[in-house]
Image (cartoon, rainbow, N blue to C red; front, side, top):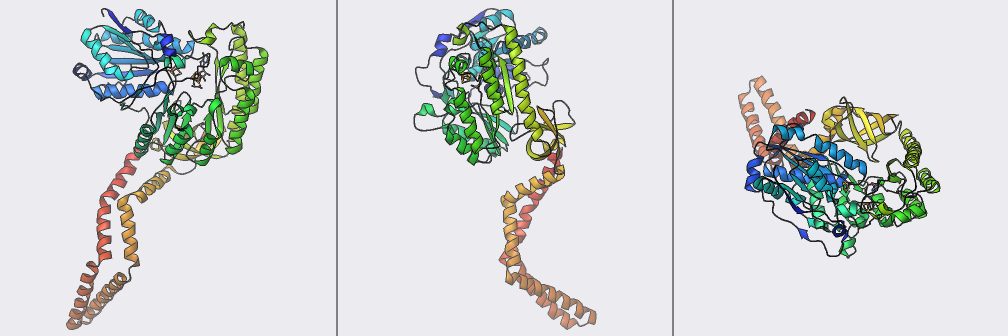
Length: 586
Ligand code: SAH
Ligand code: SF4
Ligand code: F3S
């Protein structure tokens, strides 16, 4: 490919800017003619690194591509267009990206029209885009987190000019609504409630790669969640780098607790949220989580460090005592609440004493799970410029010790589950063993058990038999067919036609004049038989007349007519139910 066109490149100082207010855009989705033609018969693949924010972005990009006419590729080698969505949070996340892009050289060699794009947080770092395009000549398009909604135009520009396009914008960021999306999971959905981050923890690149903290309008969030409920989704996770800050930028008293409550009221079976910063986790939030049974009793509450000095230098805005007090308040009101956390080991100049304070917090809280990281300096962040006299070996040794302490509480929680029954949302066949199903409990514990694949997307009761610390082995409490029958029964009783049938049936059974007529018909029929046996034609004719009169009255009786119509109306529904059970079993 010929020359590269650098439309814009990232600039950390612009990325730090938080001055003006975000715009809300909702543009119509227009597919350029050239992209439409190119997409015909071609397939796409998106590789996603990093957090849920990236997963959601990839779903949106898939939405744009499918609107243009691309189909999802079934394997890597045949894909005609590949997007690698990158993460920049730690050095090792970046290393994986290079390996991934390298894999697609063969696609380019085989198919000269192959299009390779790289996007996401890593591209928002200075020099990253230049490095990518100079290392991998077959990368055609580079863009960032702020111009995802411009994806089809970038492809169009690349195709039209026959050039490689680099367009990474650094600015505080706006909100784009009316986004298309192809969700990865038919039962579990992520819903963005806020973008970006204004916390600027000193080690973290996210506020630079994702821009300012900006909340989506409540109406947009509710509309999206409502649709998911209608589509039969079982679980919604509200997403934000710091969900607790939701609505603060509106300056009208809107809070995360209020949106959490409104979404819970929509009736989604499972509601989760992440991530919560301990600093502005208020009691109102705890109350709402405790109040609604469909808000899962699981909170991801990153502590990062247990040392007051390290926390201060990290810019986390809380100390150990405040964090532990928050944990105490949560456990007081939600005793079965599972807690997980993120911990960074080896922050610049972390002392053994600092590290001991982290271990201390872990012992005191007894986390159900934890993500542990070795500090990774991120260029342009304040911590990257801090003096650090701790050597790598010490950091690794601390990391190993931390993992051991974490494992103790994870094991204790897991073993306490043995013999008890939990509700599990079935994800489908287990990744490790396709003969097993897997899913998560309300407290986010992974469970494997034997069962048919048609239970995917159902919430089933599983009795836990065995602990593998990070996952559990259990067994279905109910017979799978019984689970299906119960479900169809539940759905049927809500179906308007079925409701009408049951109401008409009750009215019919309770109506005295109708039952009298039923009796008269029966009696007349008996008489007809008796007269016929006796050979009494006159008597028979009299009885027949009485029979026909009663029958006509009966057939024209409003409750009878109503019941007959309801029965007839129900027929297609019954056919549907039968095929539904069949379909779900397949
Ligand atoms: N907004 C979320 C998640 C941010 S990134 C939050 O505040 O919790 C996820 C985790 O990555 C962080 O919680 C932190 O533990 C870790 N992390 C971020 N920057 C890091 C760095 N430079 N080195 C090591 N770990 C880091
Ligand atoms: Fe990064 Fe801190 Fe923002 Fe989380 S809250 S994204 S750790 S700056
Ligand atoms: Fe990574 Fe960006 Fe998420 S840096 S962790 S993908 S916000």
